[in-house]
Amino acid sequence: MNTPTRPVLSSKHLDRLWLAMIAMTLLNAFIAEKAEPSALIAVVICSMIVIKARLVIDYFMELKEASPYIYYLMNAYFYIFPFIALLVWLYPEPLAELTRLSRF
Image (cartoon, rainbow, N blue to C red):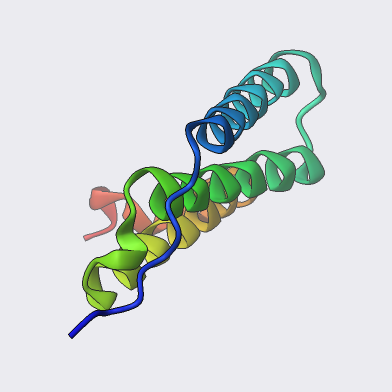
């Protein structure tokens, strides 16, 4: 029985995706170095992290062909991690207080 598979991307297409990911990484680095810290900057950087993660998961790790559990767990990780990073940036003091051991 033949199972339908995703069409194989050409190496040219993968090269373009790779270059786009490198460009996003360099843009993130430039923004982190030059821009004034703000919630908008944090959201932009976290959004690019999610986009790059989805590209890696879908095209370079080929997890769409793997078990749905692995695919969805990896996707969840790359949505949750940037969200937690954003929360840490927005609310550092309350989160530090929640994790302080001296309160016990």
